[in-house]
Length: 427
Image 1: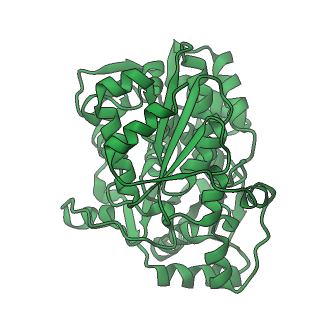
Image 2: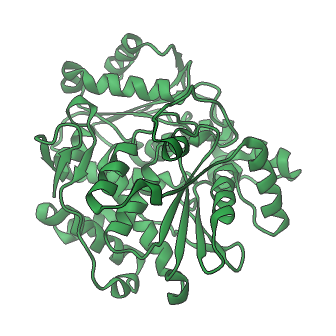
């Protein structure tokens, strides 16, 4: 598999290099040179989840890894389902929260851990990642206890839910968590600064587990195929998929699935008040505003890292950006939608509710809708309980970690201070 740096196209790397390196020169994102096409989609969709995912990822990776290696990576990573739940006659939910940290990030985080373990040459690796909520837990649990890998996770202090925080800030061992006195964009900026520091990168074997890492993105492609495989042939004909969007890795993966032949009519990018992309698609002006805190905190991103990949793919495929649906939802509308969904028999959480609302507003009578539920409602228990006047039971993973002490340290958004932390966690 060959990938190129979107910003500096002369930089070309293998899959293994891209996984180990994370980012290219000038903070450029890696993107596949060739996107495989599947002609017999029905045959592919007839396969089971693990077999199909192995087929998809083997086609992307090429002969760099054997099919047996990829199957082992997939089998170790995808040990939980991605089921559809019927919300109405016209709309299904793709539930991506059945993994160990109850969020869609489990798919990408665990596959990246397997990928890194497979392509690593035995040297010390430091994973540095920023999280707006769910990435932190997925990455922490995926890499917990792995030899030769240190993990440092930055998150915006006071801007993720207490239960999200408990899931990854209570582990210890090789997992180090840092609460940054700023927003997610400040955390992400510090990660980028670290990757721009060539000496530091070499010194500590720096890598990132954000969705900027191509292995995470590739894993996410697989559950779009799994979703469509669960639909009838009739519903596949006019399928519209709504994606709750923050850093835009999830939408990028969906568009890659479409490029590989998956029959998806169109996508909708659903955001909260941090609506840089919907405004850009309406006006043509990229004008990020300061990030604001919302009920859907995992989407509190004003400068989404993966957007350049979407533009690159659309340009290569000849898809106009205007074909993307888009919509921004306020907190008041999110709460209103959660109540309506609950009344109709489906318990959701803020991110999924945003995707559902924009989908139902834009779905035509002859189309079938699918929206992504990216986290278990219990991860947002305080907000959901208050809105719905209910008392959600905590799943076992949350109940366990909620009782443990937080091990995080607090840091100003200062790169020099972060460098001290990164050097201190080395063996």
